[in-house]
Length: 147
Image (cartoon, rainbow, N blue to C red; front, side, top):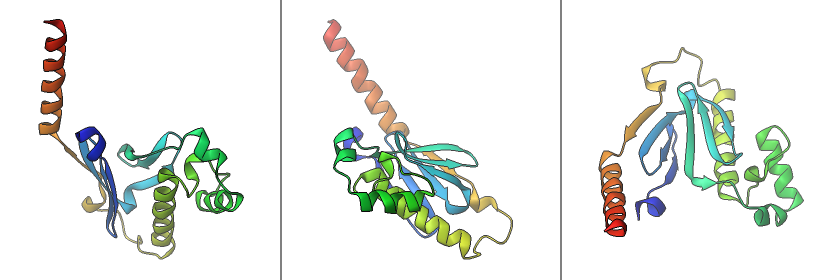
């Protein structure tokens, strides 16, 4: 249940919050270095890589169904030729487009003139209860199969 309902991406004015199954990562806008969509929406930050489980890259059928105008818009937003994960009709592409647009607006607007502070660090909260429950269920399943 947690594997399918728990992942979420929240884009707010002060940060991007990535809720995956095992952790929640709070990424301030200043910490983002690059946004990628190769396998899933991925945020490259000063403190490491954050993968967003809630927005995986599309399959090949979504890529074939994409329109030329969507590919052009996605390419303009990405600053390069678009990957299938950048297409606006896909989950990862729509999320990446919103994040890139706001990130660019903040950088161009002069909001980040001062030095980075403690509030600009990536914060990760581990979901220990979820890990324990999933581990107990895995052990119970293994014992049920073996016995």
